Image (tube, rainbow, N blue to C red; front, side, top):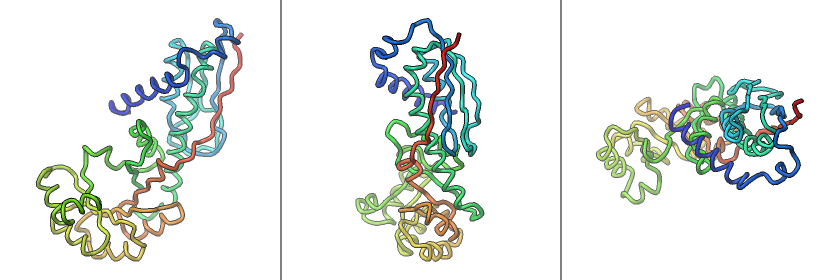
Length: 280
């Protein structure tokens, strides 16, 4: 985990605990003796790719610095389910941490699982699955790490590390060629991608120095024609409304990447639970 992702993780966990626990878990404080210790087992209840255990571990140890945690399952690998990790600590703290820990692991495992399904659909095509900026606000680095765990490829982190000229930029700049020229002049060493809707825009972008092209909402036959026309002069990304049912057709056209917003904006949570038992 890189420093940026670690910082996001710490911030997310702190805010999530504050949101859920607030001034205290009243139910556990009222019903559970403070000295009671417990063993909690997190269980994966449906098939998928597990990711986010570092988040769960940080939740438990934030609320109980003495908590002992053992991982029972690997991340980034398809599993049919079963025990994920075991936590031993004070029962009040484990109960206070339960929902936040589960929410984070379920969300991130859902992204990893969704990604793995898309990656599996295009095996053998030579194309790679890309994520997008359609992430949950505040969770981008964690969700992108989950995409990587599921076998996907991360696109730009944000607006600051790569340039992607899209339709609205083109409209404001006065055309594909002018927008591309301005971007390349302003930041000559920054990766630049240009969204194109047809051969005319492809030629304009290539002529102005674009090295990556996003082929927007093209049917497979249009993608195939674009690949032949570009003939290796730029790398190509297919994008726009890609689903599990359509991704293989897009990936089989010869493009380098297929980007899918659904990896992050529509990934269903992976079902997990936490089972507690008191320690003697």
